[in-house]
Length: 387
Image 1 (cartoon, helix red, strand yellow):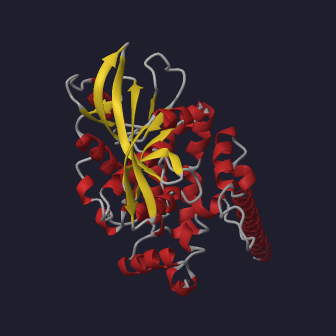
Image 2 (image 1 turned 180 degrees about the vertical axis):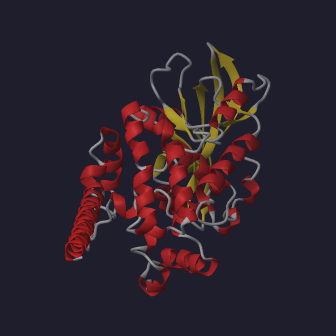
């Protein structure tokens, strides 16, 4: 009986050793995988790794121009700070989804600047949608309403954050474009193409016309190579003839004392109708002089005949304002309700638009159109709403 007991004991000890070996090997493998995964995650969350693909170089340059990259206190939020969860299943899912980036890198989906810009809007919308769904989780890892000292913020920031706290608005609602350039809207020219089509079909008999965009004008129908001045979007002109494929117009406005090269829309209001060269200033006709008590300046009526290429003018200002209103909604509506145009005067709107442009994707042409729209519909410009 003893030999059998010894054999059974040996088998038990052998099985125990095998189980112990399996446990140790499993533990070692688990530790290796855990440490390996942690190392891989750490390395692939670095700015250097994220920008190692040439398609991310442009993004990196945009990011370097922001406070998230460099600031007075020396705290940096890297690529992963905004785009990768810090831990948990969300981190695993984010890393799994990142494999598609490798695929698109190989396919060259955004392999050139042109391709990237074509896809920028789609990619941005995807990121914004994700951040809205998780209540800007990555933003809140550094920024939290409960820790904000609103009294230390600038008045404008404090005002918007007070509204955000009250309405439980998430960060990305107002802070799109915080680290990268904003994409243009799906209609990249935001109504400009419709205006051009309308200008092409404008009746030759229409006399009262309006510039659909920033438009060069010339003192002669033969001098298209020399820009004698520029009309601002929505600037009114009067058609007085046609010749050599050009449209002859009269540009009217008001000249502020000491500012000879700008024709303003009305007295005391810095709503620019046209910017003139020195030659144009010398050809201009001067008229009535008004002492404006509000500005403390003398204003002189000014008029100049000029030539404009066809297809740049429309007879219905409403077409221009429709395009401008679309700009206002698509750029200003991201952070707050569409503003009441009569909340500011024409001159006050200048500072408002300039301070907010940095938060939008507007180019200079769109900014000029929006500026004309809000100024001419300002609190003290009710009489100009038709222009």
